Image (cartoon, rainbow, N blue to C red; front, side):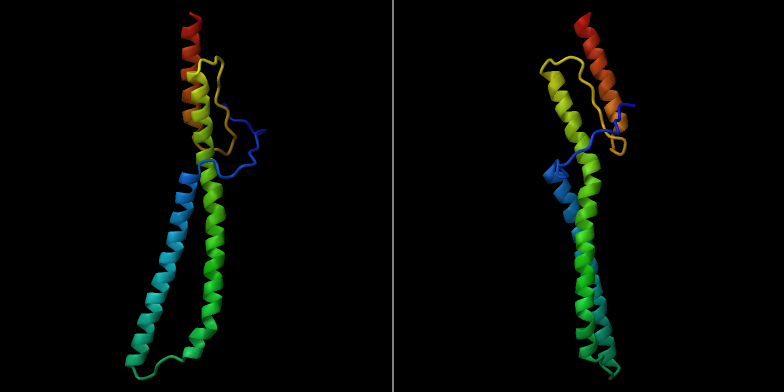
Length: 140
């Protein structure tokens, strides 16, 4: 396998378009969860009102800040996890594409080297076999 444990990338956002879409999707899930919670709370309030015993609005106001803080914390975690997880895909795609560009420019001996935890290791291996075959034809 062509993975390397010694390569450490400092930049976390390699392909902003892809990575930000992943984060946006995670945040959308959180917002939908908040909307569902609000809908259920409104339904509960409506049912309680129909029985003649409406819930105390002070209770809702006491709980609301904690719920909003919880959602904010979940959103922060979603952003961090979204960027970290998408980095394991976007980073290798960026690396493979740049190595293909080097090979297309005529450079010989190009090999894709990914980190152990990166995704797409099998694709990197196939690209490396392709590079070897191309280098063999150039030499022959």
